[in-house]
Length: 203
Length: 239
Image 1 (spheres, each protein chain N blue to C red):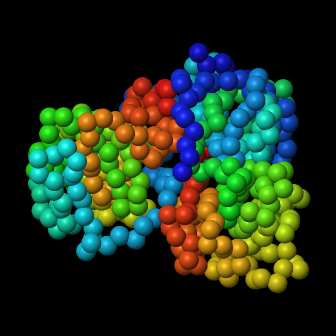
Image 2: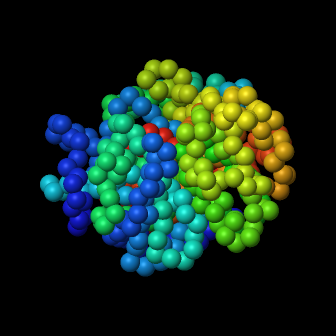
Image 3: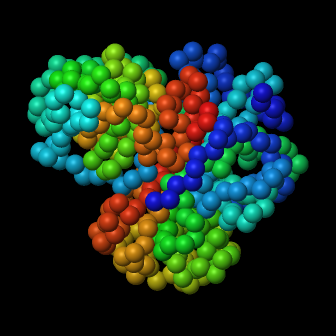
């Protein structure tokens, strides 16, 4: 139970927005950039996305190929572990379901390790990237995804803290075990459910 | 890269006593906190500070540690006052020595320097804070030869730790207004400012706004430091 801080009453003028998970605040129109790496300069001429590992048919899509797949959009909220949330956003791209369907996950596959063109990685249970809950996204608010937010394309797993939504995503490797990614090796939670406040290892 | 084993359970919330508060600039204050036991932080890590209202409402923000690891229960957080910041304005306007604050940490295993390898520290404005923990560690352990620090600020009044900063391993670049005796005209960080301090075996640590971090990264990569040798911490609006 939290201890009351002397003199603190909070700035809320209105009732707390029910879309905000515990410990989060509404960042409004801002969209903070929090990246641990140098922003890469990726060309859509050479950009690729791969599904590999425990699949029947390892697949790699070029920029033109992935954009020719059936489009899918997300409208909702995103939540960063640093406590900001951004409400009512829209992303456009392709459902990860579509990509996995093409590759055919093997029965043994239980987890995915998303990897980026920068070398960034993040781990996800397969159940968190299937069932219409994950995308490879290249549009934000109807415009191309800015490079500092992961453009040309990023993973989008909006029901988990946003470090799971790997910027500059290059692929998804299916595994039969959970393998910690970049932030997960550096103290952050393996799953990262904002509604359970799974911020750090052990939460 | 060596990574410490994750803790067995959740990182606990602890109550820290505010033992001192001092102004670094008109917009930045350093809070010296004392924990019940050793802080155990590494240079570059941060703590989360949580404020709780009587009705249970809480607000949490992360702040970098400015003090070097020294095995003691005390550590320092330097906090920039953001006008819209619910937590930073409270810390600046209300908190005083003797108050208790709930903290959680230390956190972060990437933007850290353990004092063993060559490091190039490049900070913009308040981005100096985690880098200062690294510089202080280097000086305290007689490892200054491993470290070079270049800090970019708008004007002399924006420079944190101004009394402590000068030394053979540090340089300050002014973007808007420089002290009178400065030969370099005010302007944004350039390759000339960093060319003399880049060594090929160094790890680059860049901290500042996202725009500063991207610019400084471009300059360092242009000077031959591989992108994968550069670690970045971007200070967003975190209030």
